[in-house]
Length: 502
Image 1 (tube, one colour):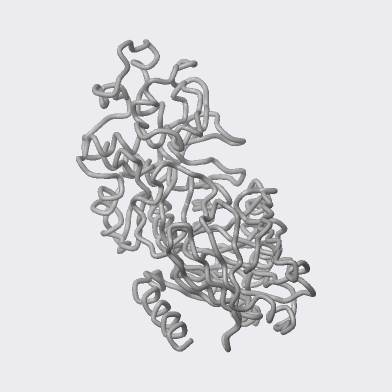
Image 2: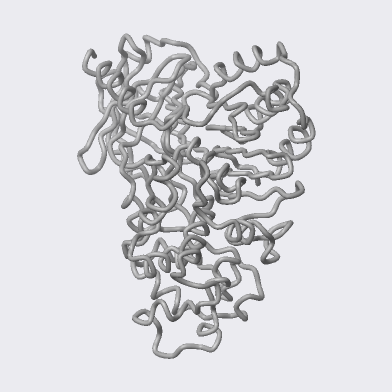
């Protein structure tokens, strides 16, 4: 047990030591015309929103962080996968390449990939431009399963029928952004991430960032960016400042304006170059699945970063920002408020829902402790599970099909974290998706005993996914255990496994 505690302690030190946090300037909300009460109401409303786990939120005004919260077990030191928010960073890479005269908006896509073209090239494929990819008007019908089937993504994309004239019909497609990432690699000789590190991330002091890669060795572009929330806030602030960071023009103002403006008719309010127009005047955002946002509001000089796992369509969250928070802001500094002290207490107390139940159930524990629970074939690769009690809580040892194992500590009314073996659960399944991610990945767990049930919640804190497990031990005398797993990333997906105990 001392070894387990030592591992937990040193894992915490490792994460914090490598974290890029508290680098942005911070001040009280009132100094920047933001009522602390408005932040309290925003944070409370988001945290209580049904079907939503908030993982982080950062609010900046006039270049300073005025509010942030990270419900436990999440924290500012963790990277988070961004899904389609990644697309906006690809647009920035394209813009930098254009600034450097490496390509042009009207360059034909086919000319970059002569070796991958089909024998017969249609007129529409020949006409498709970089601009058409940026605006999601390629003319190709999206094939979301493509990334999960084969390994030649560029060739497969170019072999698709171009059913509409390029530039005319909006069709949201992550593989279109993948092609943009491949173009960046073609014209720079560098992967998109490496190019952005040189041109953008390193000058901004961002070094804790990874990006998934395809089987072809190309950053996936349309998804897969793995980055900390504060680094995203830096990107958002640079975006708000017209491509300038600490006095240096990292991306031309012209490109920032182009990518932020409406370029096609996607969504409710229009689509730019891999960015979304918003209901609020002048607001524009990067937007990823399950609620990953970088929101830029020039009219209010505001940047907001939100990471979460949400089954909403994002409109309730954005509605709170547009209709409640932004109208409460003042153009002038506000007097100091007692609400600020309330806000500080609030942000340190938020935590995600803990499992229901009591701390102990000796009768049930005696029936399972030290015994082998065999789990049928499952998406997590789990083969056997062992439950045991310790002075820090419960311990759940997981043995995987490949023979690797790890012990997940579970706290009572608190979260305990440990490094996992392998990869966390993911809502998509691209081929070789782990390539490009450095890891390790961590999970925080908690438990509660409820009659004949052992309830466990697991949050993969430097990813996005969470599992909610219910162990039904009512038939343990017959050598049977029923395990039910739900999650926060596949809506309405509940799995039940009939396990045996030996």
